[in-house]
Length: 139
Image 1 (cartoon, one colour):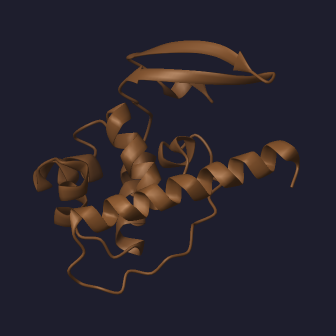
Image 2 (cartoon, one colour):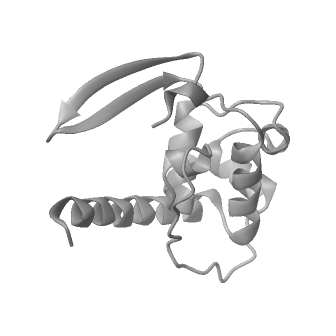
């Protein structure tokens, strides 16, 4: 993780299996508009409206607009929920790295509710954990 792109946060470091792990508290703040562009791109590619994303994140629709145009910063809680929903890493969302292998799923309904997105996020989190475990064992 490139700490030069992160400001205004507390970083607690510890080692697990010889890999550095950082626990982040506060808000991510990065240079440029990468996170804004990526959030909007992920949302549009998934055909999710700002209103649907706002309901899932439990924020106002205007907050999504502000996040996408860069006038508000993402909290760690929002980052985690967004990454779970779209199956991406926080470092991808924040523009620290460009590696992203999308999880393939299709929305087949125009009436997607917050509960549907929560279910998708839960499944995506499981899949991302399996991916990570496979990487750790060299699979």
